[in-house]
Image (cartoon, rainbow, N blue to C red; front, side, top):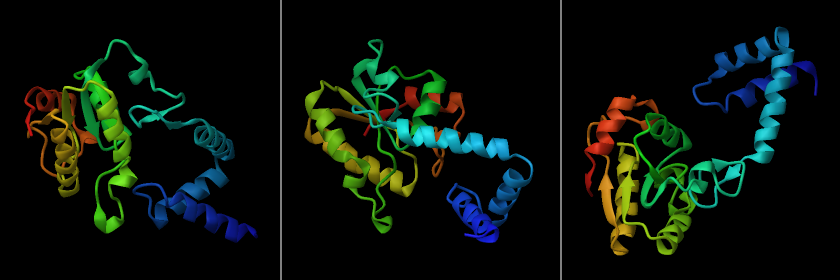
Length: 198
Protein backbone atom coordinates (compact mmCIF):
# COMPACT_ATOMS: atom_id res chain seq x y z
CA UNK A 1 0.00 0.00 0.00
CA UNK A 2 1.56 3.28 -1.12
CA UNK A 3 1.44 6.59 0.77
CA UNK A 4 -1.53 7.88 -1.21
CA UNK A 5 -3.63 4.78 -0.61
CA UNK A 6 -2.62 4.75 3.08
CA UNK A 7 -3.81 8.35 3.44
CA UNK A 8 -7.05 7.54 1.60
CA UNK A 9 -7.60 4.53 3.88
CA UNK A 10 -7.01 6.72 6.98
CA UNK A 11 -9.50 9.29 5.70
CA UNK A 12 -12.06 6.58 5.01
CA UNK A 13 -11.55 5.10 8.49
CA UNK A 14 -12.07 8.51 10.13
CA UNK A 15 -15.41 8.86 8.33
CA UNK A 16 -16.90 6.17 10.58
CA UNK A 17 -17.09 8.81 13.35
CA UNK A 18 -20.44 10.59 13.71
CA UNK A 19 -20.61 13.92 11.91
CA UNK A 20 -17.34 13.40 10.04
CA UNK A 21 -17.68 13.84 6.30
CA UNK A 22 -15.00 13.67 3.59
CA UNK A 23 -13.56 17.16 4.21
CA UNK A 24 -13.42 16.77 8.00
CA UNK A 25 -11.78 13.36 7.62
CA UNK A 26 -9.22 14.83 5.24
CA UNK A 27 -8.38 17.68 7.67
CA UNK A 28 -8.03 15.25 10.58
CA UNK A 29 -5.83 12.85 8.62
CA UNK A 30 -3.53 15.61 7.36
CA UNK A 31 -3.33 17.20 10.82
CA UNK A 32 -2.35 13.93 12.47
CA UNK A 33 0.23 13.11 9.78
CA UNK A 34 1.68 16.63 9.37
CA UNK A 35 1.60 18.08 12.86
CA UNK A 36 0.73 15.56 15.51
CA UNK A 37 2.10 12.08 14.92
CA UNK A 38 2.54 11.68 18.69
CA UNK A 39 -1.16 12.45 19.16
CA UNK A 40 -2.01 9.89 16.48
CA UNK A 41 0.09 7.29 18.28
CA UNK A 42 -1.70 8.09 21.58
CA UNK A 43 -5.08 7.75 19.88
CA UNK A 44 -4.02 4.41 18.41
CA UNK A 45 -2.76 3.05 21.75
CA UNK A 46 -5.75 4.32 23.72
CA UNK A 47 -8.26 3.01 21.19
CA UNK A 48 -6.51 -0.37 21.07
CA UNK A 49 -6.61 -0.57 24.89
CA UNK A 50 -10.30 0.39 25.00
CA UNK A 51 -11.21 -2.20 22.35
CA UNK A 52 -9.40 -4.91 24.34
CA UNK A 53 -10.57 -3.99 27.85
CA UNK A 54 -14.08 -2.48 27.57
CA UNK A 55 -17.01 -4.88 27.48
CA UNK A 56 -20.66 -4.84 28.56
CA UNK A 57 -21.74 -5.02 32.19
CA UNK A 58 -23.44 -8.38 32.72
CA UNK A 59 -26.37 -6.72 34.51
CA UNK A 60 -27.10 -3.36 32.87
CA UNK A 61 -25.41 -3.79 29.47
CA UNK A 62 -23.51 -0.48 29.85
CA UNK A 63 -19.83 -0.31 28.99
CA UNK A 64 -17.59 -1.62 31.76
CA UNK A 65 -14.05 -2.83 32.34
CA UNK A 66 -15.33 -5.43 34.82
CA UNK A 67 -18.08 -8.05 34.94
CA UNK A 68 -20.27 -5.54 36.83
CA UNK A 69 -19.99 -1.79 36.29
CA UNK A 70 -19.50 0.49 39.31
CA UNK A 71 -23.20 1.45 39.34
CA UNK A 72 -24.44 -2.15 39.42
CA UNK A 73 -21.83 -3.06 42.04
CA UNK A 74 -22.85 -0.20 44.33
CA UNK A 75 -24.89 -1.17 47.42
CA UNK A 76 -26.16 2.43 47.62
CA UNK A 77 -28.37 2.05 44.52
CA UNK A 78 -32.08 1.13 44.73
CA UNK A 79 -32.35 -2.29 43.01
CA UNK A 80 -36.16 -2.10 42.80
CA UNK A 81 -36.10 0.88 40.40
CA UNK A 82 -34.88 0.32 36.83
CA UNK A 83 -34.33 3.06 34.25
CA UNK A 84 -34.17 1.85 30.64
CA UNK A 85 -32.17 4.09 28.29
CA UNK A 86 -30.96 3.90 24.71
CA UNK A 87 -27.26 4.70 25.00
CA UNK A 88 -24.34 4.99 27.43
CA UNK A 89 -24.32 8.74 26.67
CA UNK A 90 -27.91 8.95 27.96
CA UNK A 91 -26.87 7.15 31.16
CA UNK A 92 -23.97 9.57 31.63
CA UNK A 93 -26.32 12.56 31.29
CA UNK A 94 -28.69 11.17 33.93
CA UNK A 95 -25.81 10.30 36.27
CA UNK A 96 -24.25 13.75 35.91
CA UNK A 97 -27.58 15.33 36.84
CA UNK A 98 -27.46 13.30 40.09
CA UNK A 99 -31.23 12.82 40.16
CA UNK A 100 -31.62 9.05 39.89
CA UNK A 101 -30.40 6.53 42.46
CA UNK A 102 -31.81 3.32 41.01
CA UNK A 103 -30.36 0.84 38.50
CA UNK A 104 -30.13 1.04 34.71
CA UNK A 105 -30.45 -1.06 31.61
CA UNK A 106 -28.82 0.32 28.44
CA UNK A 107 -30.34 -0.93 25.19
CA UNK A 108 -27.48 0.26 22.96
CA UNK A 109 -29.98 1.67 20.49
CA UNK A 110 -33.68 1.62 19.68
CA UNK A 111 -36.03 -0.51 17.62
CA UNK A 112 -35.68 0.33 13.95
CA UNK A 113 -36.99 -2.42 11.64
CA UNK A 114 -35.96 -0.49 8.53
CA UNK A 115 -32.34 -0.58 9.76
CA UNK A 116 -32.59 -4.24 10.77
CA UNK A 117 -32.60 -3.46 14.51
CA UNK A 118 -35.09 -5.62 16.36
CA UNK A 119 -35.41 -6.82 19.97
CA UNK A 120 -32.57 -9.33 19.60
CA UNK A 121 -30.11 -6.63 18.51
CA UNK A 122 -31.01 -4.56 21.59
CA UNK A 123 -30.43 -7.34 24.10
CA UNK A 124 -34.09 -7.47 25.11
CA UNK A 125 -33.58 -11.10 26.19
CA UNK A 126 -31.08 -9.85 28.79
CA UNK A 127 -33.61 -7.27 29.97
CA UNK A 128 -36.32 -9.94 30.30
CA UNK A 129 -33.94 -12.14 32.29
CA UNK A 130 -33.13 -9.17 34.53
CA UNK A 131 -36.85 -8.57 35.15
CA UNK A 132 -37.47 -12.23 35.94
CA UNK A 133 -34.53 -12.69 38.32
CA UNK A 134 -34.71 -9.40 40.26
CA UNK A 135 -37.41 -7.80 42.42
CA UNK A 136 -38.04 -4.74 40.26
CA UNK A 137 -41.09 -2.68 41.26
CA UNK A 138 -40.89 0.08 38.65
CA UNK A 139 -39.40 0.58 35.21
CA UNK A 140 -38.78 4.14 34.08
CA UNK A 141 -38.77 4.32 30.29
CA UNK A 142 -36.18 6.94 29.39
CA UNK A 143 -35.89 6.29 25.68
CA UNK A 144 -35.61 9.34 23.45
CA UNK A 145 -38.78 11.10 22.37
CA UNK A 146 -38.40 10.14 18.73
CA UNK A 147 -40.61 7.81 16.70
CA UNK A 148 -38.14 4.97 17.25
CA UNK A 149 -37.76 5.79 20.95
CA UNK A 150 -41.53 5.79 21.43
CA UNK A 151 -41.87 2.43 19.63
CA UNK A 152 -39.11 1.01 21.82
CA UNK A 153 -40.81 2.34 24.97
CA UNK A 154 -44.13 0.79 23.91
CA UNK A 155 -42.46 -2.58 23.32
CA UNK A 156 -40.60 -2.62 26.64
CA UNK A 157 -43.64 -1.28 28.50
CA UNK A 158 -45.66 -4.27 27.31
CA UNK A 159 -42.96 -6.67 28.46
CA UNK A 160 -42.96 -5.08 31.94
CA UNK A 161 -46.75 -4.91 32.26
CA UNK A 162 -47.02 -8.65 31.47
CA UNK A 163 -44.85 -9.17 34.57
CA UNK A 164 -47.01 -6.82 36.68
CA UNK A 165 -44.24 -4.24 36.96
CA UNK A 166 -45.23 -0.57 37.23
CA UNK A 167 -44.17 1.31 34.09
CA UNK A 168 -43.54 5.07 34.04
CA UNK A 169 -42.28 7.37 31.30
CA UNK A 170 -40.21 10.51 31.75
CA UNK A 171 -42.39 13.61 31.77
CA UNK A 172 -42.85 15.53 28.55
CA UNK A 173 -40.59 18.32 29.75
CA UNK A 174 -38.18 16.79 27.27
CA UNK A 175 -38.82 18.15 23.78
CA UNK A 176 -40.22 15.81 21.13
CA UNK A 177 -37.37 14.65 18.95
CA UNK A 178 -34.87 15.56 21.67
CA UNK A 179 -32.15 13.24 22.91
CA UNK A 180 -31.20 12.81 26.57
CA UNK A 181 -27.51 13.25 25.86
CA UNK A 182 -28.11 16.94 25.02
CA UNK A 183 -30.53 17.85 27.85
CA UNK A 184 -29.53 20.16 30.68
CA UNK A 185 -29.71 19.00 34.29
CA UNK A 186 -32.79 21.07 35.13
CA UNK A 187 -34.80 19.64 32.25
CA UNK A 188 -33.73 16.10 33.15
CA UNK A 189 -34.57 16.66 36.81
CA UNK A 190 -38.08 17.90 35.98
CA UNK A 191 -38.61 15.00 33.59
CA UNK A 192 -37.74 12.46 36.30
CA UNK A 193 -39.86 14.18 38.96
CA UNK A 194 -42.84 14.47 36.61
CA UNK A 195 -42.72 10.93 35.26
CA UNK A 196 -46.09 9.27 34.84
CA UNK A 197 -47.51 5.81 34.58
CA UNK A 198 -47.15 4.52 31.04
